[in-house]
Image (tube, rainbow, N blue to C red; front, side, top):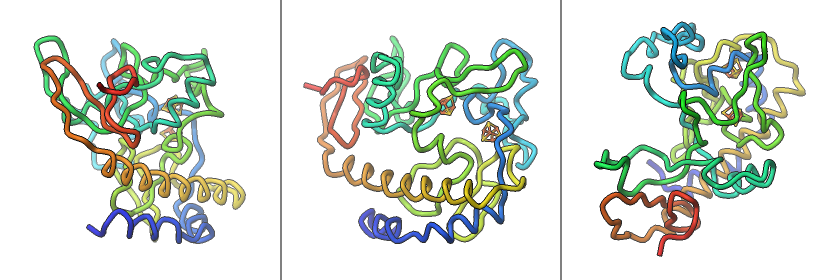
Length: 244
Ligand code: SF4
Ligand code: SF4
């Protein structure tokens, strides 16, 4: 893979109009199915909602193990602060340590990990997800939602960027599309341009964050039972306070 700095230069040089062209070609309109905000199986039910986002895939969500996966979306330190300010939330109301890399200790997860994920509820859904009486999904922090949510179901094909949960199901130039039942629908040029601008902003921010994580990484001697999260601001405890 090219260096993160090289990928960052490529992200900064992305042509928004070309990204918008690709988004228009792929097509997208959100149906508010909620699949990108929820765990991969319905809470307390028989998994009837499991395939909501699976129509365009080769059936990855049919895997039983995947069905138990909670919602996992990367959220950056400043995005966590923005979400906290939006609702006077505590840090842990908004974010949890990214689970990848953590070990199963006797009292729960332990070890070191990188970055944060949006907090989930008891069902494994994003803590900010709500459904109205008609089953339509809604984001309770819509105006403050992180870039990965603002740009779903799209990402750019650059190394070092974080990818959303859904499998990649389509690709056009630098734009990748992830599983979503709204793909293939007509999108206005204005909406495609707005998405393209957010997509470029996200790619730049993700690479700046990845460089910050790398440059600020200091190995820590985590005690048994502890979780340490490394983000672009250094090592932190699960409540967001600095480690040490
Ligand atoms: S972006 Fe796609 S997966 Fe997410 S709620 Fe909209 S239609 Fe569903
Ligand atoms: S913050 Fe909003 S858009 Fe993002 S996963 Fe949660 S409910 Fe969905």
